[in-house]
Image: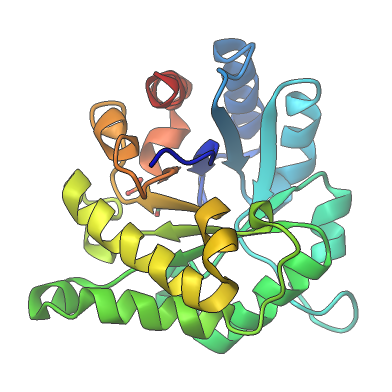
Length: 256
Ligand code: PGA
């Protein structure tokens, strides 16, 4: 059965580029995608410090702006953190949370993601909630349970008024930045399990409208096959999002 979810191609720039390079990349993207093709939504997530200058470059384009992380308190003595209202005022409409790099290197827990997801939805920013298994879990064969547990713990008690208030990104850790992409069938298997978990959390109708992305070495050569899968609604793109030509090619291919 066809769905009416809009494909989302999201770029996660991670900790790359200085200000001039960020501005140049944003300008190149706007030039490469003067119009975002029908049926696709495009998002870029620069480092926090470059959000404002990238927002300026994206003005008037169809490309949305997102952050890579946030803190759940609105303001106060939290040195080094960035709140949801701050991201909102910088022009963000999305925010990645729970990326495996945050979970692993900065010891962020499922509970942290849950607080961030709630703060984002309450503040009018769409969380791009990441989940995914490490290689040992993949090899042990328990990856579906692992990912479903992350989704349930991270999103429990979240209240959604509409399905476009949440995006989930399945990113098997062994495929991130390694060039090892999960096959489209691997992606579909877990994205489908994620959707079933979303049915339990939010009900069937809501879950049917929530976008579930795949991430992990997504590139121009595999994007068409990935988004052709019924439960894969786009991609969270790291490495390939740093090249305007590759990223815009992915957008065009996803639209086709
Ligand atoms: P990659 O990163 O595309 O470079 O594998 C994806 C991600 O971490 O979001």
